[in-house]
Length: 162
Image (tube, rainbow, N blue to C red; front, side, top):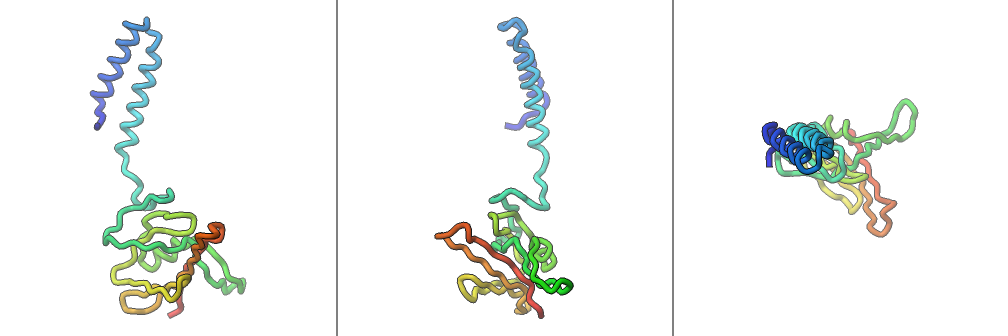
């Protein structure tokens, strides 16, 4: 049911009237609180969800193409200045390659929509290559999902040198 301000006003007037008639005005505060609650509900219900990113686990934006993949939220790369391997959030890398991040699937995986024509090929149960529409390897994905040891659930995505 959609609440209009007229309906909210009518409900609050009725609640106030009932409070005055049956409870000698002692429930007038409840009537005011009910009115405020209904106004807040109406205001929050009409605001659109931030369409840029959904940050709650398990909530995704709809995929425009109907295709979505699970890609690790960690980006593993070699830092040439320090000479060490590093990890950071993979969102920037994914968006750089044209992926749309639809939301967070779980503690390890983003739900993403790949660019049109891109495909992935598993080379083992742990490793996957992602190819662009020209057939060039762009990304390497490592994902370990051990159902016997959930604490060892992890993954990362790396950029492939062309």
